[in-house]
Image (cartoon, rainbow, N blue to C red; front, top):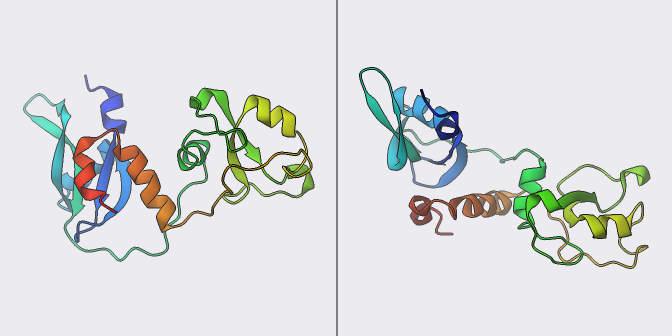
Length: 175
């Protein structure tokens, strides 16, 4: 039986020019390779087995045809905000596990603050409680780093952070 964890492992996707453009699940990467849309550049230590074959899962794939990538966007999610902020409370600068952090709306939602890249920061529970339904200025608190909108730089930053767990990605994430 195939471990589903293996099929959900992140795989770095390179354009035909070897430029990192995305991260996908191993399952999707395997489909792209088997369809002939991509080739495997690096294999992971994991494999999937059928009754007749064993296939090593990719760690890095490269598209065979160059794809022009329009303005990139990434899902606004708790995980992506935590990674952007490096699991650091943006008020007290403590690095904490994800379970000990919350998302804080810099401008509270009750004051028309949007749920956006520019208004969300990682925040520890004590700082979030202290800030409450106020702006940082009103609460006498200062942001460690102002939240930034999603950009190509943010995308590369997230890829580098994910790549720290996979040595095979490093040579492709040189920027």
